[in-house]
Length: 265
Image 1 (cartoon, one colour):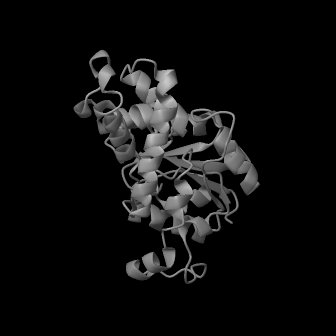
Image 2 (cartoon, rainbow, N blue to C red):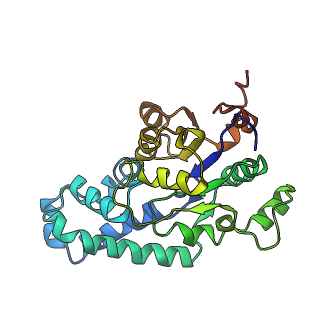
């Protein structure tokens, strides 16, 4: 490990490492309910299929634990009796996401895999810390041995059958914690499992709530703006915002800096 550099890297999963079908599952689950058993309340709500946009998902649901996200969405669309309906909505979404994962309806971001591998090559311990209880379902299906072979990359630590889940030194994903993001609890727990002080960790996030959690935990925050939301992540005080992790100067991590390849000085 490089002296004076970052000593721990903590990654959100959905939207950072994996292009997951969570947004589709949340949208489809609510549409099914509003077209079916909740059809009688449609006119009393602000919901429409067109109104459930990627921007709404990013602002209202992204980064939150399942129940908190479900309730936030119901409140956003002014669904009557939201508290009494949240369990049904969350369960419908979970059933959909499991079917989508089993059908392999997700992909890993190549730039994220390149970055995770490069960080590990520096000797920096890594942790996965997603609010989603489904994160491990994605991570265990992502093969790093086949990815590195396809990319022409060679690392001593990559062995046949290695998955992205295997690569992480700690996995906090989906753990039952008292507080969800933007509270820093999950990131502080990840740092503790890595045995690294929070101020020597950096967090990679795509959601405003995740950036806020990193900052609240005294960690450096690297925002990945995959949804055209660079301004939102910057406004949440991310230390660096990129649209692809290929933009990050990996060597700067050894100097405890988040920087782009174009700004190495």
